[in-house]
Image (cartoon, rainbow, N blue to C red; front, side, top):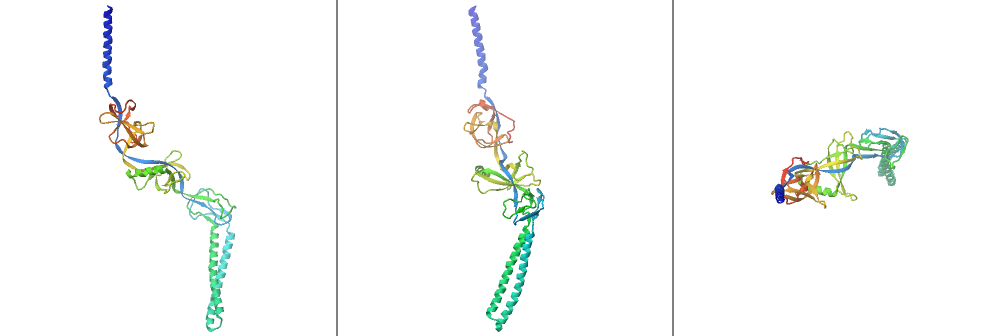
Length: 376
C-alpha cells in the first residue's frame, strides 16, 4: 500500500513539473514589447534665448553752456519735450549787456572804416599832384585797412556775444521724455559742471541690447548655412513679470567686436514702443529667430538618455526587429523633444517606452505610440 502511495505521489510531482515547464516555455520565447516613435523630418523654427537690457534709442543729458542763475524751469518733469524746446532760462542781463556793448563797438568800427576810406581815397588822388607825400598816402591806406580788420573783429565779438545770450535759454537737444530736474529756480549753474540739469530719452522706438557668447555666435553662424532665413530677423521679448511684450521687434545690428572681459557679443534689437511700456534699464529675456531648419529630426525626450560622461544615447528598433544603440547629438530642447543633429534619421523607430527592460541586440516587438512628441 505504501509503495502504491509513493508511486502516485511521484507521478503527481512529475505531472506538475511537466505542466510548469510547458507553461514557462512559451514565455521565454516571446519577445519583449516596447513602445516606439517613428521619426520624420519636419520644419522647425530655431530660436536663441538671450538676456539683455532696454536702452533709449537716443539719450541726451541737458547741460548749461554758460554760467548764471536759473530764473525759470519751463517744463514739467516726466513730460514729452520736442527738440529745440526751451527748458530753462538763465538770467540774461549780463549777457545782454555784453551783446549790446559788442554791437556798439562794431558800429563804431564801421564808422571809422567809412571815414578812413574817404581819407585814403583823397590822399591817393593828391599824391599824384604832389599835394601830399607818398608816406602820408600810405599811412592813410594802412589806417583804412586796419579799420576794415577791426570791423571783422568786432563782428565776431558780436556773434560770440549773441551765441552766449542765446545759451541763456537752455533748449532740448532731442525730442523725448524728460526726467527729474536736478536744479530749481535760483540755482547757480556753470558751463563746467559735471551734473546734468536733466536727462532726455527717446523711447519710441527703443533699443534692447542682448548679449550672446562668442562661442554661441560662431556655432550659430555655422548653422545658418543650412537654415532658411528672412532678410529681417524677428525678435520677441518677455518682461520681468513673465508677460510677453506685444510689439514684435527686429534685429538691428551685431557688434563687430567681442568684449574682452566677458567674451560676449552685443546684439541690438529695435522695438516700437508707443505706450512706453519698455523703459530704459529694464531686464528682459528675448527670443531671436535664427531661421527655419526644413529637415529637422525631433526626438521625444524620454527616448534620449545620457551616460556617465554626458554623451546622449538612443535605442532604436532596426529592420530585423532587434534593439540597436545609437550615440546621438542632441542640440537643444524644442518643446518636449530634443533636436537631433546627428545619429538619428527619418524612419528610425526610437524606443520611448520600455527602455529599462531591453538592451542592444535583443529581439523586441515594436508598438507605435500615439502620444505627441512635443515638437510636432
